[in-house]
Image (tube, rainbow, N blue to C red):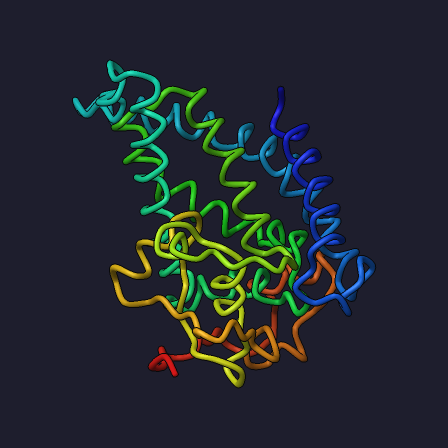
Length: 273
């Protein structure tokens, strides 16, 4: 079964769940920005993957050949002899920590933050927004993950399962769902934590809850924030979101705009309140 079929099935499931147990019942299905997110879920859920495969395969072959001529072999396949279940578990944890670290960089490096603004332009949170991201952001993730994943050499089927599971958790994180994670909040990311990651600086602390799948990294490294009263931020976004483009084409061109304002980093971290 291809990834696109899994994405469609998970999306249909979350459409139903959000109608049954919404966090904000006033937010209807046809909310502002839905058309933009529908474009992104088609482009990033399928065509971006196809395009990246066509682009990165010859580049990776060229890199491997260049390094091999210097006696360097990236593909050591450290995990090659492990049982499939062990590869699945270790790959899930390792990839998630790498992605948590990259997510941190996206918020703290000014040029990368300009890419990541596309994702943070979400003003109404539901599962559709999980696929709103700039294509350049995926290039950053793929590039920084390439060497460690090449060295470990996990089985492709394990990586596919992780991609599907991560999509399901990503949908959950962004979903307009009335869900309390309980003790699981210390392990898994969920909507009650992730919505605070998207809080407008005027509505909550900045640079918190970087979790992709596992919330444990935020609790370990002191970037977790979750009010005990179950409240949610009154506004989402970033400083200057009012002037940020709303259509996908201009959002994709935003980081390379000519004559625009200079790149500005995400707001400095604030102490949780």
